[in-house]
Image (spheres, one colour):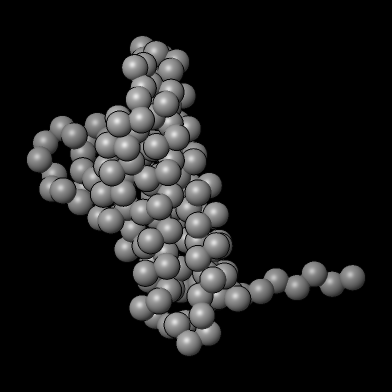
Length: 157
């Protein structure tokens, strides 16, 4: 039995791979420390938002919240891209539609990931979770176009 490999990535796998790389590289402790050490500009500082770490000085609750936020961002990105790409109309398929699909999926994923993980923090409330979700959506707005370009490069169903 021959196994064939497709040369084309699907829009979901391309967008998820780029989201994983963004979180892995720009959420790393070394990049976060570098971005926060001086005024680097809004884009470079925003890239450090889904920061993850293995700091032994931080509380377990803070570490779990930050690491879970980064993991859920990638998982929800895959989920939302697959849902949004599958729902595109045949007449709406194209470059602009693909970019907006990936961009919107990343904004939704960031907002939902931080909304859920906000309840792990001490003194969690629905109002604080909503404010945090707005910050996550802002991150998706500034960085999401990268996911949109990756989604555009992928093959849609």
